[in-house]
Image (cartoon, rainbow, N blue to C red):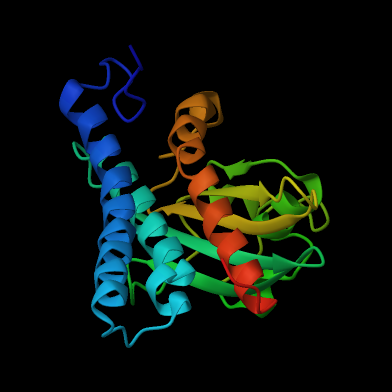
Length: 223
């Protein structure tokens, strides 16, 4: 059994495992529905959509980020802890833009210019090519400059932060960073990283797939 790290004294229940699988399946089902509708339109000769509109990789990436957020909230449902999850696109080892952030309008989406600071958690994840977890961001900011792994934002400087880089298996370059922010200090702990990685790793192949669709479409190739 997998230990429930939101409440370490208990194990993840069957319903929670089902919730995780259901969250993943919903994302797949959405694309399957669109492709099925596209196929039926082609057969009837009434198709009015482009393949890019049907495949919709950015939309899928957005759904995947939301599913990750919902899973973390479910695992911590017995507490008042809430999570925000975003996916940052990366080019040439620099953050470029937020592809999405959930929940919408919660004020947790840090400006990209701030995150290009070498001390930001995202930049550390990009440069070190591994997950970076900050258990208490307010304590991290008390460290001397040059040793921090979090950049000061302001009113958002509380809670825990986890940044997980996604490395393209073909180019071996970081193409995205999954950023997970909990609103309570030490809600994410280093010793429980295996469970966080277990959840995230279910989404990595799916995000890579959508990135591949984006790459193909930008080059004007057909599927």
